[in-house]
Figure 1 (tube, rainbow, N blue to C red):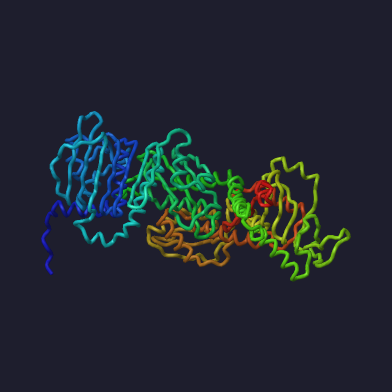
Figure 2 (cartoon, rainbow, N blue to C red):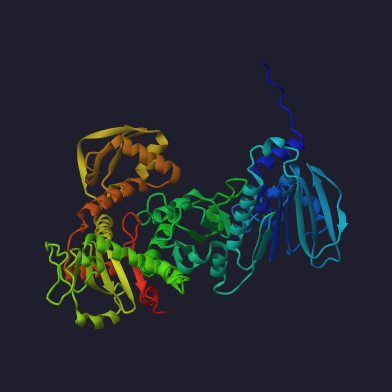
Length: 623
């Protein structure tokens, strides 16, 4: 086959190719139009969607509007008012001058606009790339953009879209993402099935109000505030406590200089900040804002402008990880108690079901009581009716079933250990957040009392976290010991990977991995972390090289050491079934209060739950 001669593509094809990069689906159209409205100074933006956006997308704003002479330029490629300076000093959300002509190339586009000082407005239409003359139009100051029959002239693209309901959902995600960053702007979205609005607000609590409206009351009520700065970069926002986690990352929002981004580096840093605080496969919720000198970040990486590239990615990563961890540590027990207090909500719900039942004999409490007495009758064991907390059980005390003590009471239940310590009651008011230990039940749970609540602690999970944090502090302070190899192992890598690994050599050496250059594209491994024991050095080096190539981090080795430390902590902590003395239980509570992240174990499970006195009284129908 002979090669065809080189020729100039027609403008219609050029515009369709460009549209394929910018206009992926209806949601991307909405994103571009809303960004234009924000750049125009709008304080109210209304979005309407029909047929998932394939039939109609309408975006109305009250921004500055456009003059008659600007409308033809607005739908021409590479025309913009948002790039007065250099490409590395971008101050607006839009700057490429591609969105409107790209949309007009694959849809029926109409734009009506009026400036505030103008007596009337004007409109222009673009039908599949064909531009019509400007016409007079009657409208209020601002701009109305309508996009109809999206992809009507590119039917192949329609095959790759999802159903109308799914596309409408994606449109809602775009509006919510934009609304989070701009609490001073009112947003509304109307689809075939639903409508939602976010009123504008201002002042110190404006962002949290918008966060509550977009992400829900549960997140806003327990959100941990983030505020950090490093080398001139400012980070602020809100993140969820570890106990409030989700099955996916949909509730993670990141913004760079007000621009909503979906950046892998930011999301990876967020994940690393929660590395040992969440169960595997679970995700935190977060709203993070990064303010940085525009010349230090490249937003011109992709036509959709959803990705960014930082000049110093390591600084951004350290800022996010350090800022989040410090905030979580500072509010550890406060956030943990809020999450643990959700147990009280279950009690209140149960109490509500028992309030004035139609038939008292059928109430949940009555059914539960009947079940207990029936069980006691079947086993002929009166001890099943109650559990004396003041009874002191020795570690190997036998079970006394069916007998009575000197005062005529039922025998001791074997998995309970407790003491009455009236001299400790005054200490409940001294600020111990987890109170004073009162009992151990089922040889694994510590019952503690505060001034106004009851706390139940899982002794194994709690001590596991304490041991793990001590091991991590040792790694951070003294580094990991290394096991030097008698014969260095030579690992061959692509030249770029080898150079990147060697640049991280000092960090890897702190974790016990010692590397030396061995000619072009080769590395000599002279020592491996002693904690890992026998290790496949070649596989380890290739894994680290892949991670550094993708994320420019060497966290994989630290994660392996942390995983090992977590296993050591699990096996080396107080086991379930061990009877503790009262002094040991109190010591464990005090260590939990002093240890960041002690509200969860290494696997992300809670270490304690809290039941307020008010909830206990509701449970017994005293309120």
